[in-house]
Amino acid sequence: MTSKLPNNFYIKKRKELLSKSKADLIVIGANGQIQMSLDQSYDFIQESNFLYLTGINDPGLILVLSKTETFLILPETNDYLETFDGELDLGNIKHKSGITKVFKNDQGLIKLGNMLGSIKVVHTLFDETDKLKTYAITALPFRANLLKLLKELNKKIKFINIEKDLARLRMIKSSEEIDLIKQAAKITKSAIEDIKLTKLTNTKEVALELERLMVENGASSWAFKPVISTGQASTVIHYVDLDQKLNKNNLLLVDVGCRYLDYCSDISRTISVGSPTKRQGLVMAAVKEVQDELIGFLKPGISFRELEIKTEQLIGKKLIELGLIKKATNKSIRKYYPHAVTHHLGIDTHDLADYSSPLEENMVITIEPGIYIEKESIGVRFEDDVLITANGAKVL
Image 1: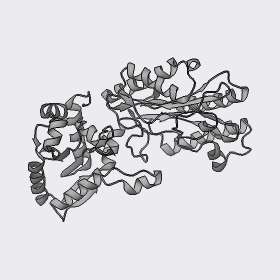
Image 2 (image 1 turned 120 degrees about the horizontal axis):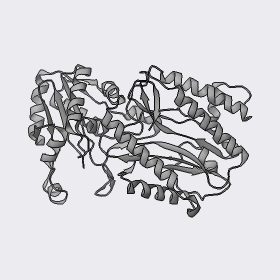
Image 3 (image 1 turned 60 degrees about the vertical axis):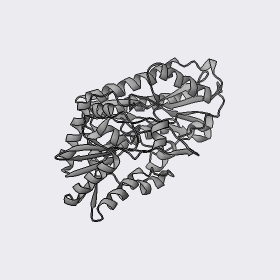
Image 4 (image 1 turned 180 degrees about the horizontal axis):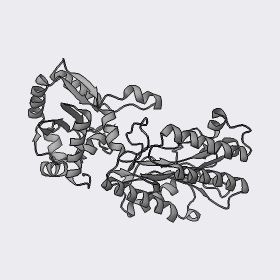
């Protein structure tokens, strides 16, 4: 499976990356298959930077990009893989990526090794093991494996992390990318609006119905594990266990997104299962008013720090009005609003970005304020996907 963007998109992005990074040699690896159990693998998800530069959704390839040539190195293969999984479609790989030179694994590594003899510095992506410890996530091994491979080809090679250059490219979306994100958002919104809660009894059924509606309208999969929670669980930001019964006295928090032709949406809604209480209605109205004001605040030049400060100011005021705090301080506000109000959106739900850069035209971000009152079992979040334009912002 490959992306639906034309190959001139990928050709252009590779040229832009070479220009912006001023690199003599860039090497980016695809993801490989990850074991699920015995000889079975999890569903394959491509390394998003490799996908962004090639459009290829096959595992195990290596992209080599220099000022003089571009080529792909195929993964190692064997009789078993070729018999049971089939051979890679080289014609499709070349057509989709716009890369005409594709080498078998041994030939490609010899060629790359020869290049490393004259080019002493390689721009690549670094291993994320240390960065992901905070999130209790085990990093995929493929970046570390590629670094090891390059060292084996030339022990004296030096590495430069190309992540920031890729981030600055990926933050600014092309018109084609915007159209795909817009369609993903449309599919997700429609599914949330069309779901009939009166016919469902628990959060697992809600998830299954949302997935059915999204797939029927063209989505390929969830963009991320759905967050569908109610009551006390709705005050836990990333509650992903679909184990709760729907209760007409509680609100239902739905934070979901779909993947449409490799691009993601991310939308949150807080829905009343029955008729909301006065208190629930007040909290919902407060969060929606904050979101509306924040969207109106957006424009090129605004920094992410300014946006977060603005969010704290608005939510702090609402928390005072709701009688939850007496004075708006960072500590008092963060008790009820513990997460960031935004992130970039694209191939990844939390798309690669440099958050030290201010908002620019054609960035796509989320706006997702929330208020979570644990002692009252009320969790409210509203989130939309927003395009930054020359004149402000547009909800996709």
